[in-house]
Every structure is written in structure tokens, then in C-alpha cells.
Image (cartoon, rainbow, N blue to C red; front, side):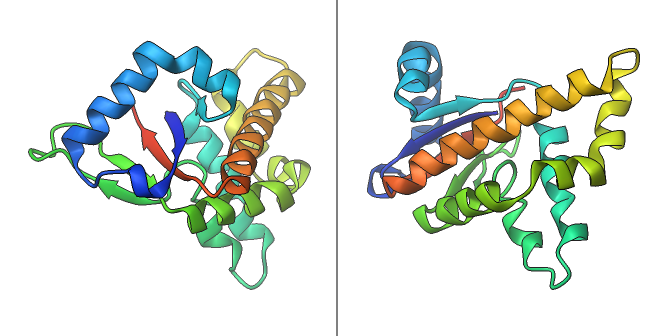
Length: 163
């Protein structure tokens, strides 16, 4: 999963444009954009990161966390390939980026881990759970920092899922 923050007004609602923009960002500018705080990536564990954040639905009595907890990984509006033969790009508006940043800033990692950690750690058989927990704490903190910066500048976010 590759995330790129940009001004909402610069985004074209067109699969071909998104593909070119994100491929160039990944292949030509990844390190510079990551270092500038406008790009972030989680290579293979983003589905489990989504499960970790999804645990918030069980922790919030009024259900208000249910939509916000989806925003960091899978949430947003998909833009599909014309043949639907490729994963869609997903767009978050600046307002949704603020919601994602707020969720990540206020969600207790320890509470999320207590609710979902055993299930998330299961595929890591043979590894120390504390080590796995630290990996996911890093993912959670990294997403929080990325979305926090994007929200503070009023940026939208484009997500690419490269398989």
C-alpha cells in the first residue's frame, strides 16, 4: 500500500492519471517524498493493520469509531480500472484525511492490540509476540504521523495497492 498526500485540487478523477502519478511517485520520487513526509508505504501487512484499527468498533460503545477506523487503510472512494482488472486507487478527501488523523491520534494502540493482537500475531508463529506488537506499533505510529502531516497541510490522500 502506497500513500501519497497532495492537494485535493490537483487530483484528477481518472484511473490513467492516477496510475501515472502514483507509478512516477513510487519509481522516481519515493525516497524524497517519504523523507518530505508526503508519502508512506506499508508493504505486505496492510490488511492486518486494517484489522488492528477495525478493533476500534468493539471498543466504541456508540459505534462512531466504525467508519473512522476504516479510513487509514481501505477507506475512501475507489477509482476503478476500466476493465476492473487491476486494484482500484482509493481517494481520501482532505476532510477524510483529518478524520483518519484524528482517529489515529486518539485510538489507543494498547487497547487495539488487546482487542486484536492475538489474531494479528497468529500468522507470525514462532516469533515473540512482543516483537510482532512492536512491528504493528510502528505501522500505527507511521500512519499516524503521515496522516497528521497531511491533515495539517489540508492535503487529500491517494492510495495505491500494488500486488
